Length: 338
Image (cartoon, rainbow, N blue to C red; front, side, top):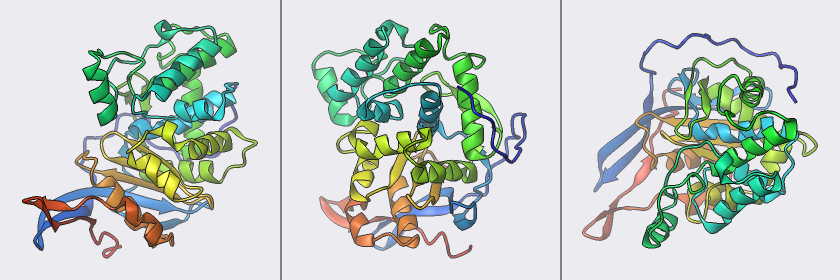
């Protein structure tokens, strides 16, 4: 059921001009002391009351949050009456690796609501996780909608339609009651209107927001009471981090390492973090590469006062030369100019 909008900051309703954000160096790879590669991007950390704790680059530029929107989409579904065991609610917010527990979980969501995989409208794909994909291919598996990393979200979207008496077919249409509710919920949690609308890789409507808005939303979710939808989704993700990503994935690892931390990644170099005290962090790596996310995330968390020893295990693997460490992938000194 839709909820009234919170006061929010208006962003342009039309498609933003194709301007290049003023990104700055966020991470660099060295080889024997020489900087070999540089990853540019923008980031921000905000407190529960909205104050900026740190920033770099252009955190108010509009961007597509991609799969980091999934926890916010899950909040909308819970508000609309979706009730699931916590492991399956975590799967609703997941970009899963395609392990048996993920595929079985998505199928279970459908079954609980009288549906089967024919209700899914997401794109087809092989499992996202490296080990899971190799196992799938060895078994002569083909791309399917259930194996695609967003199938938990899509199963829950179809289920939410059943619960509310909405048409299941066409649930991805931007004018469908479900997607209208999702858009309104994201507007409320980010505190800003969408700057542009597109379509994500799996087929769902995709809304452009600023890093500031997304950080605000994750801080609110992480600090929310379990009596409200935001808190229920956050608690489920923290309780079952293996359902949000999978074994060997850094998002699962960081939630296991730091108690109370909420984390979700997204394609094209995105990382969102929420802390129990209401702090929210949003990172965008401009080249869309994945490897720079975690060194930058760890650097920000250390700057915010988290134990660096806790986070040491999440450091990137060394740069090798002839099988021996000769360099590192590390966070750049991105706060020096701010």
